[in-house]
Length: 111
Length: 115
Image (cartoon, rainbow over the protein chains, first blue to last red):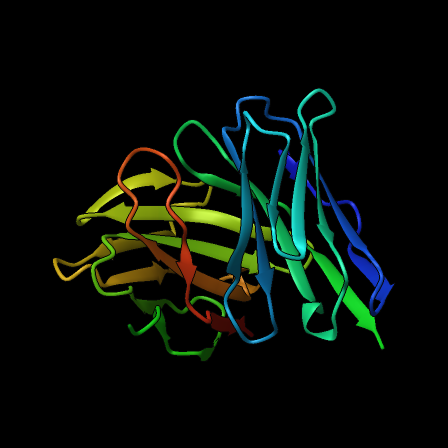
């Protein structure tokens, strides 16, 4: 069963606009959520995280929102830049400190 | 500080063969995790090693095994390769002790193709 789901395989956004990437989860015991970004031929790199006791975390152009009642989190990128084009993975951390990953969303920023 | 390195970067094998992949973590990192990435499946956790001991294991068959050496370098072995084993294998290192999350740093991966 997929505990973390990213239902949009890809997303295309105009440069300068807001990019919103969504992630749903089923395990209510996740303590932590993370977003990683992956460029082709490179390993994923950490982007931003949020603790389950918070509903928002902001870091520059990146903001992650957590809605625990809906078991939903989203990553907002404002404004979107060409260098943001990448695959974005969300992951939940379970009680064993193991990361459970979504399938990823490919973000394409159009000039 | 050097990042996580993985060797080889690309590998082509045939069904039934076995393969060994290598990962050198960031200096000072004692935790090494292995993941399998296939299109549409995200990263599937294989196992994690900490101080030469397997601490966590994902839902993969026994054909997948690993080990960690005293210098924290880790190897992953897949025996009796199947076509479905074709994937990108990623290694990640962290400082992680049991406790709050420590960021994982990923290597570039080994692309395994099974013919």
